[in-house]
Image (tube, rainbow, N blue to C red; front, side, top):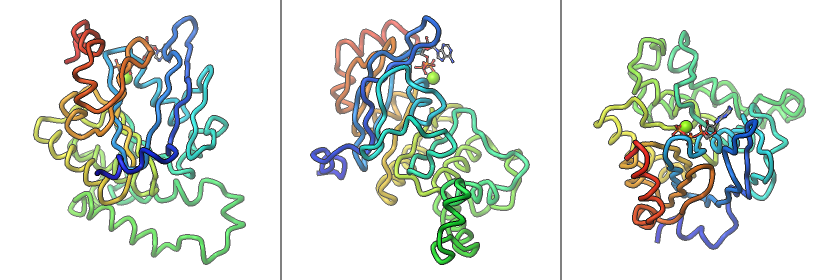
Length: 265
Ligand SMILES: Nc1ncnc2c1ncn2[C@@H]1O[C@H](COP(=O)(O)OP(=O)(O)OP(=O)(O)O)[C@@H](O)[C@H]1O
Ligand SMILES: [Mg+2]
């Protein structure tokens, strides 16, 4: 039995409850609900315009749902601004890479460690000195993550000059540096070649297994989702079309129909 299966009986780590998002007249999400359990890799799929990015942006707090709720460990996250979601254990990467291009790999990852430790100045100053992370601890953490993601050789290289695939790995390192409970990945395979997608698939599985992470994967690359997700939620026209194991979702007639009618395969 996998970790995720064992967790099925427990309360969800993250619960999406009847979330709708309306932009002007467009209903981008229409009453979507699903649960994420600890240790799961959950793949969120759907044809163009299905609502994947909209949902991702609700989870990372860039968009406010028009109705419904999103609960992290039973507590609504909807009153929390985007810069304060790292504190409750939600980490994210960006579809188009959002690093500091003129900083080194190491400094970009270092920024990630501060996302969790110093975003709230008042509670930080009230915190006892011995709880506060010392500079030495931060360095240790940064080095551990660089080694884990095989980025030590480029630790002192400025990010702007690195290949896109490596930059994506740096972004993953930065997200991991905040010790998230949930990692939200927005199309991590976008722009990667075949070989890089394989490496990425292994890496995401490794992160889940070694670091006990829960992963939400928004992805166009069906091969990647179907090979590593333990649970898949399929959206179409803002509604949940199907959910289940990759095999169940792949065989679902509504999912097949939705994909046949789109240019995604
Ligand atoms: N900021 C916005 N303002 C207005 N409409 C939007 C906005 N963001 C998304 N939409 C609309 O909401 C719907 C869902 O879009 P969304 O980007 O979430 O889909 P998606 O599943 O991520 O698609 P893709 O696979 O193309 O990235 C679409 O009809 C889109 O045009
Ligand atoms: Mg999208």
